[in-house]
Image (cartoon, rainbow, N blue to C red; front, side, top):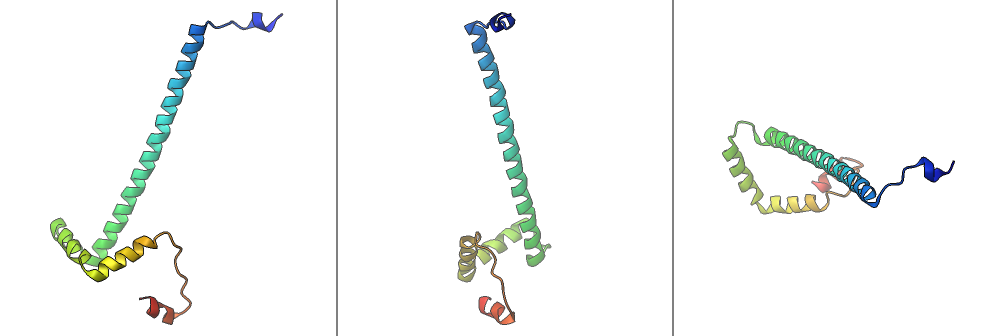
Amino acid sequence: MDNDNKRKRLTPEEQLANIKEKQAQLKSQEQAIKNRQKDKERKARTRRLIEKGALAETYLGGELTLEQFKSLLDEISQQPYVKDSIRKFTTTASMPPVQLQNESDKKEIF
């Protein structure tokens, strides 16, 4: 028997319909992947915010209201030394941490 006789030949309209169905499936898969990535990024951001907030509360005090806390951060962030420190840390954030050899190295850095 001939292979052409075994398989039903699709009309051009059926071929187009199959292609459109596959496109819709691929579009759905693409959207699912994008949604998973957004969810992952959102969860990572939420974790960072919680960790930083916990550190801020630990070092700056947990008894402040949100408005007091904001005012404190505004005041602190306006200090020239703090601005310089923030700039230093944000520009070197991608660099690996420095390995300190002894206590005198710590004094030189801080």
